[in-house]
Amino acid sequence: MMSDDSLFDDALSRLDEAAAHLNIDADVIEKLKFPRETTKVRLMIRMDDGSRKSFLAWRCRYDDTRGPTKGGIRFHPEATIDEVETLAFWMTFKCAVMNLPYGGGKGAVQVDPRKLSKAEVERLSRAYIQAFSRIIGPDRDIPAPDVYTNSMIMGWMADEYAQIVGQAEPAVITGKPIALGGSLGRSDATARGGYYLVRHLAKDLNLAPSLRVAVQGFGNAGQHIARLLAEDGHKIVAVSDSEGAVFATDGLNLDALFAAKNDGRSVATTAGQHGHTALAADDLVGVECELLVPAALENMIDEDNAGSVKAKLVLELANGPVTPEGDAILAKNGVIVLPDILANAGGVTVSYFEWVQNRQGYYWTVEEIHVRLRTIMEREGQAIWELSRDKGITMRTAAYVHALSRLAEAIEAHGTQNFFMS
Image (cartoon, one colour):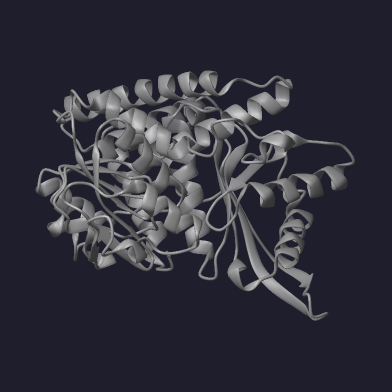
């Protein structure tokens, strides 16, 4: 997890890098280099043994120039304010990249939910909404699931908000169960968006019809991207989770891997079966493949291991999986990175669809969801690819330039120093 104080500074360095390629007013940078508001609270809940325990929690609304803030809530023992504000910054740019009418937000509780009972997790989830009910709202700040939170937790949170305001407000939270106003197509949206992006840019990137793929992190996004790419004829040669990794030159047996995860086991437990060979989790980034998919946590590819990457294309399904130092090494070695604020934006895009459906009370088919998602991923991916090519900059810098131009236009529309001094 992220904890270093320099993390937010690293994020801001992307802003400065993008600004160098645009003629924007100083007001824009001044507004975007600080979060608009970050609220810290202590959540006090009754434990199953009758004791009371408090947990540190935050909600950050980074920037709302383009609309209500949007972003997940994570439950993690190593969550920090620095991490929350950095993730909210990334969300601001991600929503602008996809041209969604949102700003960026994020929330977290410093807790290991695996050490709580189901009833304690529900009480904690409801306590979060009680604490932040004045900050969130369908027109102000819209949470969603993130690390160690899921659709059921979002359902509890939406229910608690409804009790506080005295009426059902499904649009207050996205990522809810389908029966409670969730959207079809949300479960695989992050992976599907990345899959559409790779497929659309395949010709521009000179990709072979069949790629060898390594997936780092075999949670929700990692499993879905493996399935989608395998169905397209690509070969998944390596996958990892927090407890280990497996490799197979001729392709892994995905059914065996899915079965292991469904049983609560590591992918490493399939080693020695189905032609799978055990691999140290840290060695996954250096596997022989054409496409590497980091789908785990932040800062997994850095100055120490970026040089070992043999893939020619990296698809960032995790948030911030490559450090700035790692980025520089990948660029020097000719590795193209499809950056997180574009590559994993399928999740927030389908969350936006859920919010729209909740507000209009009319729900779309999964086919309609997929068509709308593909259209947006292809449109923004193509624009960023052309910007990268025309300016001779990396895809990451191009994505930030693309987003910053939209944010600048909205901020400058309120008037700048030049306007008020003329």
